[in-house]
Length: 108
Image 1 (cartoon, rainbow, N blue to C red):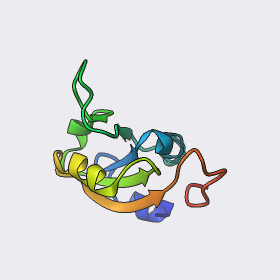
Image 2: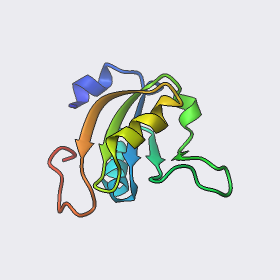
Image 3: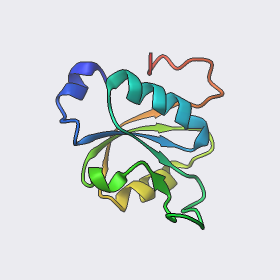
Image 4: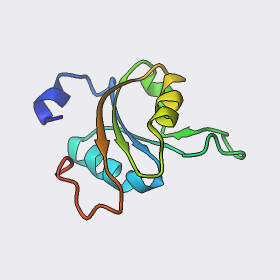
């Protein structure tokens, strides 16, 4: 997704989501470069303490919004889709990346 495509969405609609711990660095870099908010999907379901959430990063503020999903090697797509469906989010792009990758050209 290039900057022009990103600009077609309002910032309130678009969210970068790192799915799995190994995708978080790449997702954070993308969100920072594009000035977009970031969320994180914890693999294995909701945590059993604190807020008991599977998604961190104020997903409720982006209910019904669009998602650029950065998915790592340790997360199944079905698990990420299920977590996002709770907030009625639509995936508009999927980037496969992880900290194991030296550099992801999709993120630049």
